[in-house]
Image (tube, rainbow over all chains, first blue to last red; front, side, top):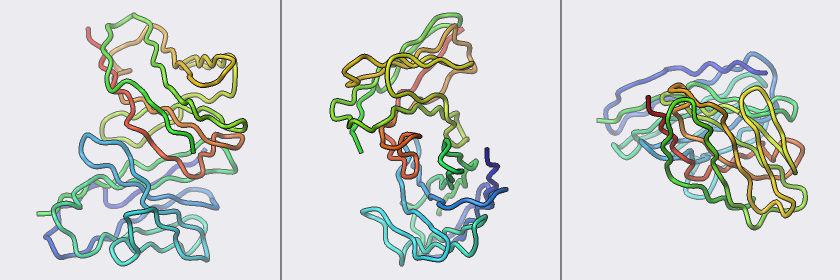
Length: 113
Length: 113
């Protein structure tokens, strides 16, 4: 199994600013994933982050808006840049552990005002 | 990744058995079927996975017919705490291609007293 800690758990931000979300895992993992979940909706995959390489973004998501870092096998950050109210969402980090089930963090609830 | 279709919502009462069916007509030979559960303000949690016939664990059973074009998640004797959104996912690999989980709309289950 894996224990994932996300910080912050929630934040209220002004439009035009940026927020960096941290994801810390208690074990080394090859791949980490970032999702967005808008109110009342399902999860949408933003990007896949491998250590030592650039993140792979899904259609509709770009690096300039959602830069991702993956400096080691237990940590990743997602930045939401130049925020607008439409970015208000829950952002979740997920990992796989040696090809077992996926584990998710508790999420970061972001409100942009 | 195969597309899945589930009912948007279901209602049940405490103590009843709940069956949630998922259609995946385009499932590939090496695809597994995986179900996740998500409570409000939490990340999704793995429930069960199967390839064919029946799988049972301490939480649920998963029934998969011979043609594998659908699957049914069965929750025995639900309680109020089973109120959640249930996601059916289909993907390749031993663990259902979880490396890149693509979530459908899910089924919102409400359990009433």
